[in-house]
Image (spheres, helix red, strand yellow):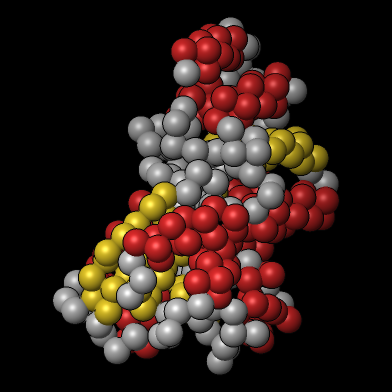
Length: 311
């Protein structure tokens, strides 16, 4: 742990010595895209959308993948700033050290657009994300109704302290206030929102709480892992499984009845918005500090349209 702290501090010190970059630019020519983890379909969709929009507008997009590691991401953004990027589109790899790249970019005169995750204490110039509080409220309300408004519930959280994890926990909590006969009996946090984590965490929770009737996986990957764990456990009663994201593979699984409900985010739109925000900020335009987008409650009844064309 001491080595990691030193590496972060060294990176910050190195960034602080960089000259002010792009401060006088009026047109965005080169944009950095720092992604948390391209193993996740959600982040891949944003990457593809930003890069496609950049190609259309003649803007070079330089993409880096932190693979879930905050220290790696700090170093990657140092490199992006050294390449004279005009703007930074930034999806923090975690809550730890998330503010470091924002402070460094602002010191270098480079505007920052956060997508999906904000940096606590040092937000970017604008934050583009799904209204995860409201969308998670809808998901948990729907699944609570399907379970008859009673039963034992498990929550498989995303990466602790990240914006989506905090907001989805809050939104689900708001919904559950209307269902006093639903008890959250177990909850665990993932390290990286992965399906294998969803499986392992849910399997452990089901062993401790075999009477579970509802599971909320805070991302579709976690929900798919949870559904797999339910299948292996082979309970003698119905267990409802909810996810969040609207990942392309998960939507097909939802259609096939692997799990029950998700919230489909407008990932393609958010990617395009990220690039448009970069262009506007480089020109000197002011943007709202938050640009929250709706997600659509998605079940077997309406999933086909999202499989045909993802928003």
